[in-house]
Length: 592
Image (tube, rainbow, N blue to C red; front, side, top):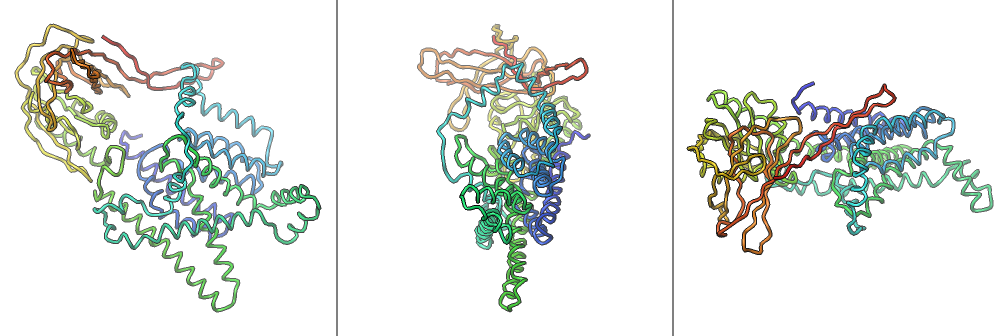
C-alpha cells in the first residue's frame, strides 16, 4: 500500500466508474438495452456525481455500494432468486457506516422483504445477517460499552432544534440532475460565457424525471389484461385490494418499479422534515435512481413510437433521438468544463469548500519544495503555519518529509529558538500569522508556490534572533513566559505573548498537542479571551507566540492549560479466540 493519498482518490474514482458499468448492466437486465444505454450515458456525464467521484471521502463510496444494494434487492423481488437477504443487510450496515443518513435505505429493504417470494428466503439468512451486522459493528459496540453509550446519548440530544418542513431536500435532490452550479456561475470558468446555453438542461431533466416517476407509479398501480380481471373478481373493496396485491407480487416488473419508487420517494419525504442542516452530499444515496427512471421513461416512449407506423410518429422518434443526444452532449460538456476548471485552477477557492478548497497536488508540491530547499540549505527543521483548511492534510503529508517538520495552526506561531539555528517556514495561502514573523525573527522570502483558485503558498528562511532570558514563572509542563509585545494586525493593536517550550514533543499517529491560553483583563468587565494553539510536534527551545489580549489594559492575568489528543485503542477478546480492537480519538487533559 502507498502512503500517497492520491491512491485513495483513485480508488474512489475507479469505484464511481464501476458504478456506471453496474448501472448499465442492472438497467439493461431489467428494463432493456435502450434503457440501460440511456441511463448509463446520462449518469456517466452527470456533473455532481463526477464531482463527488474525484476526491477521497467515505460518503463518496455510496456511488458504488448503493446500486450494488439495489441489485441485491432486485435479485430477491424481481429475479426471484435466493441468497439476496444476507448481502443486502450487510450492504445497508456498511452504508450506514459510510454515513448515518443511509439508514433510510432500510425502507426499500423492508419493501423487498414483503415482495420477495418465500422460496427466496432461507432460515439461515436471518442468522447470517445478524452475525454479519454484529461483526461489522463489533468494534463500535466495544466503544459504546467503554464510553457508557455516550455516542447514543449525543445522537439523541444533538438534534433538538425546531423541525422544518421545506423544499430544501427536493432542491438538493434535483441538483444531481443538472450542471454543477459553482463552476458555471464562477466568472473564471471556461463555460461562464456560455452560461445561458445550459439553462434548459436542469428543467428538462426534472420534467423527464417527473414523467418517469408518473409512468412507474401508473405501471405499479394499474394491472393489464387477465391481471386486471383476476384482481376485480371480488365484489368487496378489501377483496379487490387483496387481489390487486397478489397480482402485484406476481409481476416482477411492478415489484421492481415499486422498489425503485420506495428508494427515491420514501427517504426524500423523510428528509423533507428535518431539524438539522441538510447538505448536498446527503443525497448521494439516491444515485443513480433518478437516471434509471429517466432512462426507463425515454426507452418506453421510444418503443411506443416505434410501434406506430404513421410518418408523424416516425418524425417524433427521430426528434426523441435528437433530444437524447442533446441531453447527453450538454451534460457531458458541462461536466467536462467542471473537470477542466478544477484541473486548471479556474475557480474561486472559497466557494468550493467550507474554508477554502485545496487540491492534493498543490499541497504536496508546496511541502516537497520546502523539504528540498531545507535539504539544499542544510536547514534542520520546517515549520508550517497551517489553517483549518490545510492543517489535517499538512499533518499527514509532514510524515513523508526527510526534514523534521512541525505543523501548527495559525491561531499561534511557532518559531525556532536561538540555539536551534535557521529553519524553513511554509505558510498556508490564507495564513494570518505573517504579521508576527518579522517582529521576532529575520525572515527571508525564499519563494512562493501556486495555489489554484487563490493566494500562493509562501516560503521563508527564518534566522532566530538573540536569546531572551525567560521569566521565573513556569506554567503548565514548565512552559516559560518570555515577553509580551504590542503589534498591529492591520485592524487593531493586539498584545502578543511569547513562551518557551522546555521539552520536545514527538510526532505521533493522529496525535496533537494543545496549549489553551486565557487572558483576563484585571479590573475590566470584558469576557476573558481564549486561544488554543495546536501542533503535531515541538522541539525543546521552540518559542510559541500567542496573539491574545488588549495592550491598552494595564494588567492582564494569563492562564494556561494543556491537553493532548491521541488515539485510544480498546481491545476485547471473545471466547479466547476472537480479538476485537476499536480505535477512537480521546482527549487527555492536564491543567496547570
